[in-house]
Image (tube, rainbow, N blue to C red; front, side, top):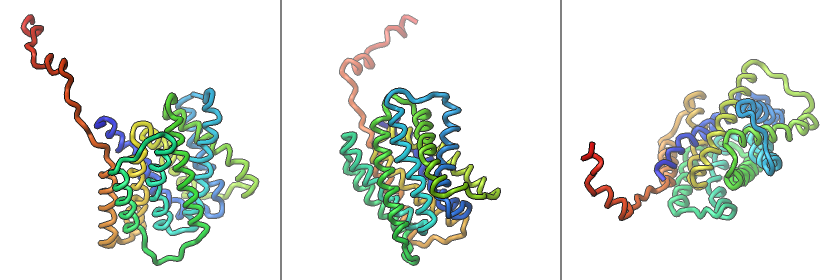
Length: 304
């Protein structure tokens, strides 16, 4: 279990990278093209990973890639893009922070992974910490933005658990490439029909698209799915709380926002929740034969 927990820092790359996308999307990307925003995020990332892996899906992975790509990538990215434009980042982040609870319940039903008590307590503490950190209550909330954020949270939670269930027998990098490519291809004709020509972009927007696609998507999703393979869903969900926390930290450092003492306390609670979800290492007593061999004289050493 201790070796498994070492994947937690790798998994944390994903929510930290995702937490930066709220600011990048709001500040640098065109608000009127959420579908193209999702396409430009998913498809280049998928093609990049596909070029690195040089593997095509086989058997059931053709339709699995389509399902997971739609849930985890195309629809999810479009809804997140829309939520980032319609909601304050604090509100959008807080809604997404409820995903640990949803992931735990779905994992219980879909992969027979019963949540530990510490996971449930950690999720409650972590979500409370996120609420203290990011909820300001000073801005009006757009109902369509809330609906987009809630839908993104539910769909991605379903997709992540299905990826965990179906992931056996497929390497992480190729399966991530297939999902991203499928998600981008599914959404491309929809974007053309709904939004017409692609948006005109300047140099900062091009850089923002590149960052979101390569770092916050190709790298982040590879790390996330690697963690889903090796960690309990409840633990991965708790690590995901770093997403909104990162959003607040980026806002503080880049946008010169100030953290109040209550927000600092919220950050502490969030990290406490993540630590509560840490797998417990149980040391098994050595077998009698092993113990006897270890205590017996080393005759081979005497021969030497």
